[in-house]
Length: 392
Image (cartoon, rainbow, N blue to C red; front, top):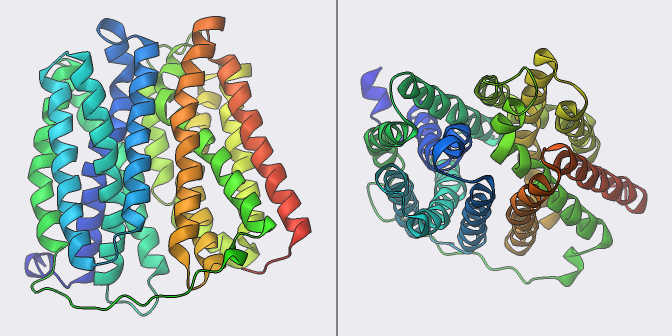
């Protein structure tokens, strides 16, 4: 068994390395910030500055995501994947060792870029290395790493917090990331340089039909829907009367619900059509977003976390899979446009969130606006369905 797990060409080893890479690049470098936010707000961060940090982090991710789409050579992808892993660890260590706000800001931008290298470039390396005839289901397993990344980073953070500080948690997360990164860096590499000529296809402007533009606009609204709870959910729950301290349990549930989500949603899309399933997932997400605005019931608010976790990962997989099918032989430009739209939503949402919180004194107006924006996304998709019936 150990020999198989050290075999660079073993499918189980490749998937495990991919999941651990996501734990480092997304869990430690991104989602641990959400987990530790309530504790940093108590004695270091203001909510406004936390929103700015989140926005800058997603700006870095947006730059990295668009940049990664244009990396064609697999050997270059391995190089940038390694850079992303290193950046994810170093930027986490910065949060543990300094209280300098400028350094925090710079580290969050760089961490976002590193996360993109790990998640997007790393996924393409996993895709190349896997030895399956049909890789879609296997990639669903790979992206379950996003759920695992939330669960693992949350458990490490909370364990350290029982006897330590949030800074101690950052140190523990850095050490953990440093140790497990060796395995991912070893497995997700090639013994020799791969020489493969890139096939070039003529770009057709007809790819940006009204249907596709509506799809891109809907994906923008999902970027907004993802980031508000992805940044503030523990603090949202903690701010409700009688639910102080339940925020991190809610965040743990997000991760647990997220683990199987991409596999399940992709299977539903295969049976019932991608657009239909995307609409259902976004509707469920809206319910989850609105629950904290009308209830302080602990079960319902933990359900809010479950609805979020079970939809946001699946929606990324659903949108990108649909985009890939619509793009045909020209996926790069369409994927770039979709990723940029999603990223713009991610960058803007934390800023309006803290502005509305500072004005009204609670998260209700932020959640109402976010739910409304995601609802607009559903309307875009309903119009798209009427304009062009596409079987996918």
